[in-house]
Length: 187
Ligand code: M6P
Ligand code: ZN
Image (cartoon, rainbow, N blue to C red; front, side, top):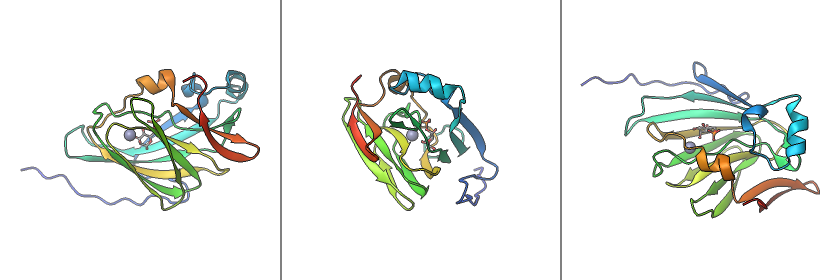
């Protein structure tokens, strides 16, 4: 039997960086078609801000092993809609996931394949359980970076397809200075 070497790493709780992790950067241009307000999108695209960064420590995609990643989701809006991650189902749809809030404010939108959506607020210390089969997207509703940790099966995979096409049945927007979860008119 070959045993893998155990490890411990310290997440920088201010920046969300995991030393030695693989860094992925998503800019606004990577989220084409995701936001409702196309005019506001085109305007902000001139700056093409970084929307989020992911620091991932991933294993071979084998049953039983675990990956973990931090996400640093920057504050911002496209029109009324708060910045969010793309959101995905798992390629192996029955794989669950755990999120843990580290810094900033936001929440998670979850959705079943039938389009039933749930919104869960997250602050530092909040644990969110993503059950099997639920798509999940995080949203920054604050004015500082929203940082969280995710732990997920190494063989879960990311299925972006249907969310990229149709989005979620709910939107998270700012209306009169308040955070509102409203129906997606295009759903
Ligand atoms: C979390 C995890 C990652 C995911 C990342 C960004 O860190 O769920 O697996 O990649 O968020 O989310 P997305 O892939 O939907 O852009
Ligand atoms: Zn996931």
